[in-house]
Image (tube, rainbow, N blue to C red; front, side, top):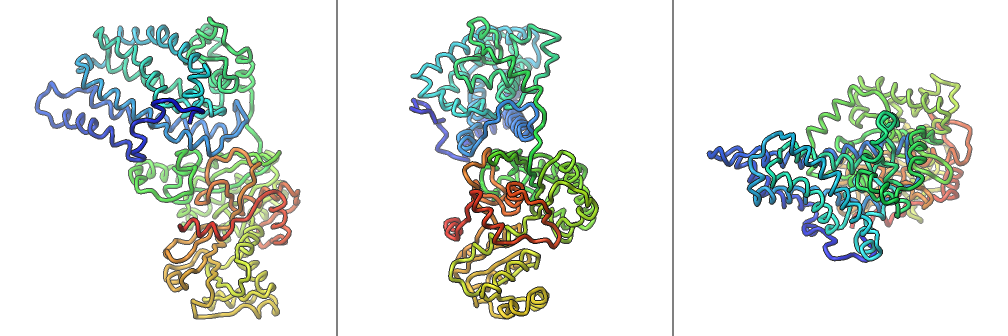
Length: 627
């Protein structure tokens, strides 16, 4: 929002929320009906029916640039600015699709009003030439002076400051403006379209190509990485007056009073408003190499919808905890394609970068869904990918690699021990984070608790939790006899006295749960039970009269930078214990692996997390989430 919002700041359909796309429905339905159902051949118009595919193509085009930009900035090569993007920017830019809705309305209504827009030819060379000349001349010239006017304090405070709130730009920043400002831009961009219509030189090709050209240049110019190769300016030097670069426009967002042009720096040269450091920043960005992090967290895809909730997916979805959305069913063709891709693509990819004080962090993802980790014939492929990621990290000089989610599963690689046996000389420290996960669970138990129920598949995390609780005088109740026998065998005789087997489900309202907790067992728990997961994945919530705590996680300190997405189902700025464990490992300089059966001192790890600014989630957050 601008500093002092002016009139027509919000779009007229803002009150509709997610139903705003319905404003295009009558026009889209009418165009489809008249083209396919009309008996009158004169009513069938190719341009009218193509407006819907063009609108949808624009959305896909935008998303491609968003994903590409976030991937490249996470890797770091050719990155322009190192400043971070936070949740406030993502929220501010979440209405980027309003511009596309306006496009649809303008073109649909324009077609219905203007007779000249009917039955346009597919191609006219003269119309394309006129469109190009009008853009280079009037459009670029008028935009330059409109842009300078928008930087006057009166208009800037009421309108343009909203756009400039984003110092580090993303492709969608290009179309995030107050509604009145977008109308002004559409007036300018309409000059070539309307002129060719009234001169009879318009064509489907000239109109569609001009829209795509504007989108391409606008989105490309707001990327935070440089991608225009230097040879283009060497082969044809005058092109620098007719094509800007991402670094050129980035300077406008950092310096504010230079580089005002739309896409062509010609008028910046003419009126002496080109930033003197434009060429230097361009060359510096091109020479920048990919960033080598200190810590890598290795994760993977979870549900079939998780591909859209990745930071490289839909920005607005990634900025919120992962929950299933009914409209994601409409994306099933893309989802199916992504599943097929995971069968053949065997390399990790960079998802996110963060900065913790002076520690550079990255998140890498294995291109496999959770369900694939339970397929026996997929295990070798997954293990090979994890092993390649560890070797790559070792060769790059990365200090720590933490294994997230099922990348550390016992049945897959014995909690990472498999890789240490194969590569005993590894310099990178491989961490499964079990010690901190156990510490988080122990410190999530309400004060004064004297008895807990432990239910779920056993692991080294549960063994550590049970041992700590029993030593502390808290009774641990087991509901499964086989699990009881296995766990009792791992405890000291003294600690085992506090481990009891029970067939009664209402012995305690504090349940420590993991994978394997059934729906029936949840239904048998007493009303008001607090379920505290110790597993990587949360249990399915079947009780509305009980409270479900988050999987082991902590709130990140404010000095963790570039946080603009949620980690799976966790709230904003909350990190899983397994991810935090890798950070702590590097910060503390611990020179040993945490894999296999290896566990660190739980109290030591917990105190280290607090000392570095991480804070525990309280049980009250579970109650708030329920409300």
